Amino acid sequence: MDWNDPLRPAIHEIGHVVVEYVLRGSARDCYCYKEEDGSYGGQTAALASAQPTGELSLQENINLAAEFAGGWAAVNLAISGGLLPAAPANVETTPGDFGYFGSDNEWVTKLAAVAEPNNPSSAEGRAKTLALNILEPHINAVHDLATFCVGAGYVSGQMVEEAIVR
Image 1 (cartoon, rainbow, N blue to C red):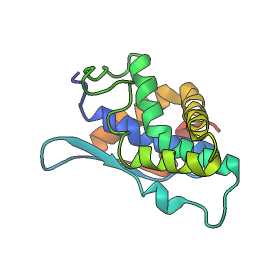
Image 2 (image 1 turned 90 degrees about the vertical axis):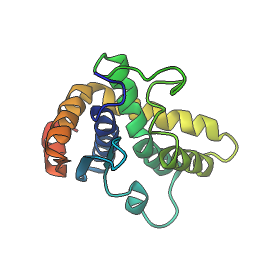
Image 3 (image 1 turned 120 degrees about the vertical axis):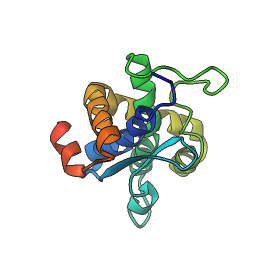
């Protein structure tokens, strides 16, 4: 299996959905597809659009940051568990980085700075740790859901809810 095959973005997107489901109690649909350039992609409805309105508590900011970090965490766990090959060292410093840097990382950084303005790196670390802790017991189910998504192009939120015990 190539390090950048369709399973990687599928695991990444399912990771977001599972963390959100565990924290909020509802799961969104997930889509996997081949881009015009031949690369693989995936998406859910934007997490930014799922944000609560109004001011958030410190823990709500950490939880939302964990939802954005869920894609990174799922890929990190899949690589460390032998479910995905690692990317080349010139592509990723830490397993899961490829696909995380961009809007996911920007949201985690922004929410961490709001949660703990005097120590945003601590808040970011807590959000990533929360995502890892949520996903670790479910990584095989995440892999199974991602494998289904690659084949079908779609995983429903209901399938996620049935596969993950909160």
